[in-house]
Amino acid sequence: MERITSIVGACPAYLTFDIDCLDPAFAPGTGTPVAGGLSSAQGLAIVRSLGALNLVGADVVEVAPAYDQSEITAIAAAHIACDLLCLWRQRKVAGREA
Image 1 (cartoon, helix red, strand yellow):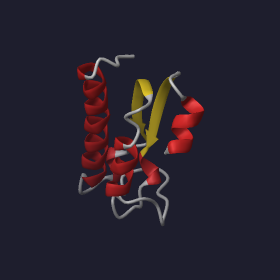
Image 2: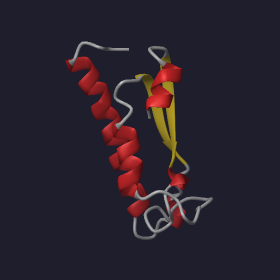
Image 3: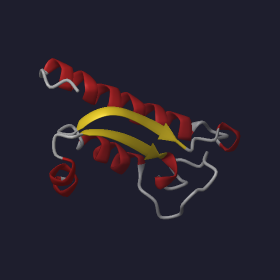
């Protein structure tokens, strides 16, 4: 993450979290599941480590409800989106708004 921070610096950044980076055991509801992907915990840890970036926008993509029989993909995507919102809130409270 230090490398990302050093490259992006204080520049405005937009983050796209592609849900199919998660292993199908954690996010089966996507059009292109990838075996051997990240766990939900690893994905959340990555998002949480981006607090130093000047994020001005973000999205969570590739969630396919038709393939998400147990809705665990939607739950993982909601957790990731919630954590992204928390990052923006923390920036606002700290006075580092984008």
